[in-house]
Length: 209
Image (cartoon, rainbow, N blue to C red):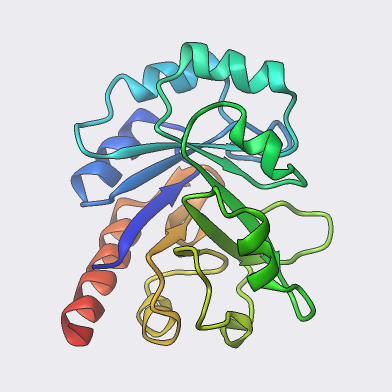
């Protein structure tokens, strides 16, 4: 069963649509340069209406220790997701499960990344786009992902209802992560696109099982 994470939630109505649509996890972006950035107080109020059994993931890019600690004090996050150049030691110090995002391009050794971040719950594989730290809507060459990665793969980057089935067929990831592919505008989720995306994931899972 492929899990679904929908990232970049900024509004309560989107959170309800996503959660009711059957997502496994939601992502809140704590990175000021992102159009999907949420303030700490805003995130805390969103988290209060997340239904049971939906995992809450907080996304950070090269944050200070103090900022992560401040967010954790005010927002009930289940998992931390690091999208910058954070070291394994940095990621582990908060005593929370974490995901390490890797921007994939030719020459990036994902087996080495998995060994370096062996304490992570998984590697989130995204497209390498110069100057951007995710949420670009760009996909990457899935054949660059080796079969023998020792960590679960969360596949991200340019996914939408039209290509997610093929992505799952090729990569067989633990989870898929989508943001711009289910939006009507940056940070505004489209309930119909969310439903179509999740439907495609469930259908291909049935075919592959």
